[in-house]
Length: 295
Image 1 (cartoon, rainbow, N blue to C red):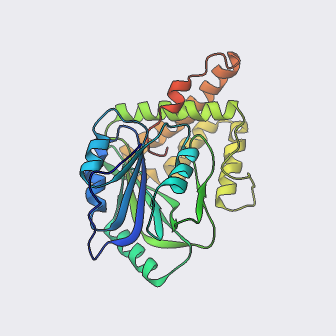
Image 2: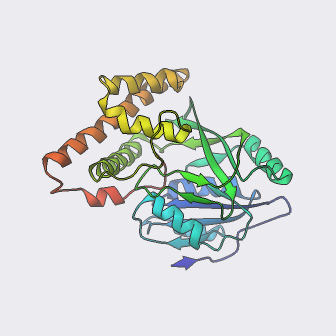
């Protein structure tokens, strides 16, 4: 079902860029993310998984083109969006409702598009937690020439696979993860269930795991082998705290690092339970009732 009450507001300064977002009950983020995009993006699309709050109402009121579709997995939902949405802009950006494009990044994207650089762009995403910026930055590919990207077909933790050269830009994307801990725990509970189900089914990873491959292949190699590591939860805590730099946020950073290690523990415990029960009681509803945010 496709809905659009009025056109997205464009002006002379809007970029030839289409924003695509997924959503499920993102009312708490919609006003801020749409205000962040106004006057910058040429068009905005939302693929909604039948939200029960005011997500769709707010999006339509702002001029967003909304499509509602049943959620079966992040990779599948994103590939549907790229293949079926009536995107008319020559560039496309993947955005989550809890992300904000900083002024510096907006300028960098505008300059790169004007200069015709590459076939895709990557940049840093800085994590925020409990309303505080963490010293954690992730290098992500988020923009590509329309028609030159597909997503890994996985249930959760999907990755864009861009055809051509990907250029790194300056500036940051801010990720404001969850309005409170109750929301964060609920989201991580759903994601850890989905991860455990994927492991139980031996689902393919986003890329072939290779220790000497590209960055994504190395990440997939670690994902495939981390359960063999002794003291792995403590190592995850240390990696998040010092390797990723969460220590810079003080007490909040320590708490975030501890919680991230707890998520890994949740995934493993759920997988163990599923194996013991011989997949008799897979929590399918939880696995498919995912929010639009990446873990």
